[in-house]
Image (cartoon, rainbow, N blue to C red; front, side, top):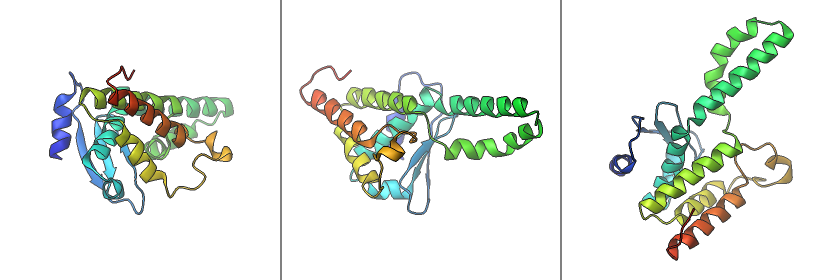
Length: 186
């Protein structure tokens, strides 16, 4: 929590009041963010991380989602889809269901791949600015996904919300190499 507070103080002119929460989520190493700046880490993610830098990388990625308002964009996209379907089928009762189901849907659904790439870029930019090697992100992603089967399989990759894990790891390694030679990471 102290490292989180120190990290938040380094962010330039943030309009969000970031808060960090830890939650038990049976066997799931994950993190997610909510629109107002709440960052939730599962206990399993914290347990699997090998060092604080890996956790900070994940937190910066989630802050990127908040910064770019990805959660709200997902709510709007989901709402529009439901409204269009309701109007097309003349079933306005579906709008009532939307109010009940939407919060759960947003938490369960992933961001778009473009959102994930944008949040990764935000994370890399801030890691380098803070003199943190981007390799920590590659390492924690490898740890988190090592038990996930078919994560980059052809069947799932077109339907996954996250870009292929191997591509994200390759990008983090490339950013790390640029960081180590002192070049421009972006």
